[in-house]
Every structure is written in structure tokens, then in C-alpha cells.
Image (cartoon, rainbow, N blue to C red; front, side):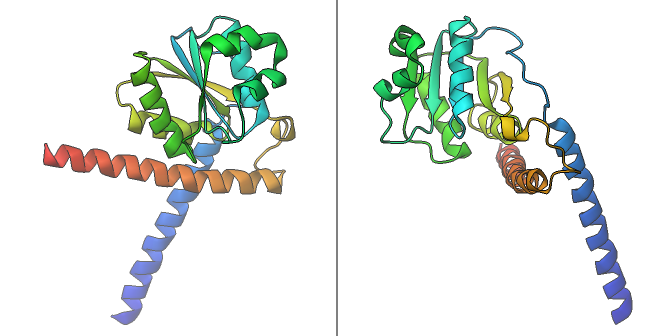
Amino acid sequence: MKHRRWRILFSLALVVVLGLAADFVHFNAQIERQEHPPARPAAAMIALTGGAARVSDAIDLLEQGYAGRMLISGVNPTLTRADVIRMAPRHRKLIECCVDLGYDALDTVGNAREARRWMAAHELRGPLIIVTSNYHMPRALVEMARAMPGVGFLPVPVISERWRDATLWRDPAFARLLAVEYVKFLAARTRSYLEGAFSSGSA
């Protein structure tokens, strides 16, 4: 009886591990390997800090008319609008009129909440263009949808030079990065699912 119980537990554990492995491979396949502009213009755009290219790419999209207003979320408290202008001096007028700095977010959950408050304060409607790193995009979209259900999102992946040619199977550093991001994504997805299940059950 005892050995049978251990066999059952081992089989269950094996199924879970294989399921997670397959889900991780699927997660890797979801990550876009090519940068592209938004599918269409929108009223609002948010750039999530965490890489310099995210902000510069978002400002370029703003200049091209893809959005009317932009939030840079998760800004370091020491960074000012003048600092942003110094990083992109040719966009001075655009930054002064149409770029807002969000200082409250400390993580992706905070980014989503900050974006929700910002859109409400400026009476902006979706869809919302999301600019962040390609490997971060799946989790960012989960958190954004969790904070703003019903709002459409237009992802714009940013690929850093360091990871441009990296692959899961050939680059251990990239594999570690994806593994950590997958765990965070899994937690975000699980949290979103449970909240949805509880809200449906209490309705």
C-alpha cells in the first residue's frame, strides 16, 4: 500500500513537471523575436521602464503619431522631465506636451495600476499601446488585463542588442532569464485566474 501511494505521488509529480516543461516551451514560443510597430494607432501608450530602449522606442512611436499621449511608468524618483529631454533633445516639445512620468510603480503590478489611474485621470480610452521588452511582454499583458479588464492592448516588443540573437537552447544566460520570467508569468497568470474564479463564484 505504501509503495503504491509513492508510485501515485511520483506519477502525479512527473505529470506536473512535464506539464510545466511543455508550458515553458510554449511561453518561449510566445516571445516575439522581431520588433514591430503597433497594429494601429491609439489614444494612449505606456512605456515600462527597465531598459533605455523601451523609452526611446516609445518616444519615436509617439512622434510618428501612433499615440496622442504617453506615460513612462516606474520612473526613478530622481529622474525629472528635464533629464528625459536631455536623453532625447530633438523630442523636447513632444516630451513637454505629451509625456507624463509615473513614479509610483515598483514592479509590473504597479505599472498596471499606475496605467489604470493615469488613463482615468486623463479620461483616456483603450486600446492602450504597451512598450516593454519582448520577454517581459506576456507578463505585462496579464497584469494590464487584470488591472483594466475590457481594455484592448497593442503590444510593441523591444529587443535589446544583448538578446537579439539569443536562443533558449544555445545561450544559458538567456535561458535563465526566460526561466525567471516564466515563473513570474506563471504566478501572474495563476493570480489572475484565481481572482476571476472567485469573482465569478461570488457573483
